[in-house]
Image: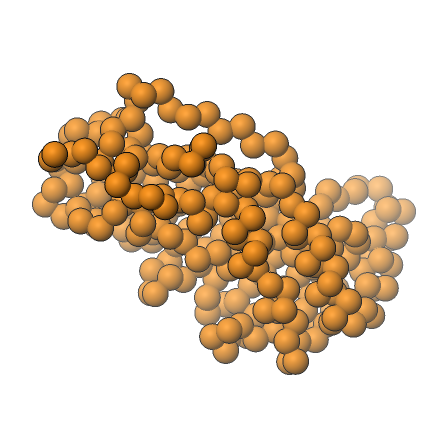
Length: 242
């Protein structure tokens, strides 16, 4: 059986954050003016602004879906610089809750997940784990790549959405945030749209690549307090059968 952790080395489409909205009409009108004004900025300016905003993040909540070699992975995860918690689903193959804290990763998977990954061993594994958290001491990475915000941000390059074919296509309110929309072509040659907050800090609010996935963000820099499960609530898959 492949490592239950390594099969969810999820490729993150992009990072972004939605700022707070304002119901006051004057503020709303002002934000629309800001969006219109920012839409006149050059692609290079927008790229620089996004880099500055995104690389200043300490934590962020991301939700959406990505296509990973034919698998659709749905995610709803809060990530900080090393820790994370949330829920992942491989469409048609099961789902799991995940925790990563102090360099260790833990997960609780449903029966469908174990059946798709462990086959005939699924019943044996679920019988031993029960309702406890699972970990794998033989897997050095776990969810490290997904849960390390610094790594995610270093992998993300605003240049990916500001190539020679990129252009500002207008303004749009996304999740209550006034944004400037930028069309681009992904590394795989697919068309996409990035929605950038029209006011400083200029986060990616959402990135859509219809043939690859979509990602949105919230809870910008909200403190993340992940608690490590008690030892008697954890089963180490790396020791099973040894």
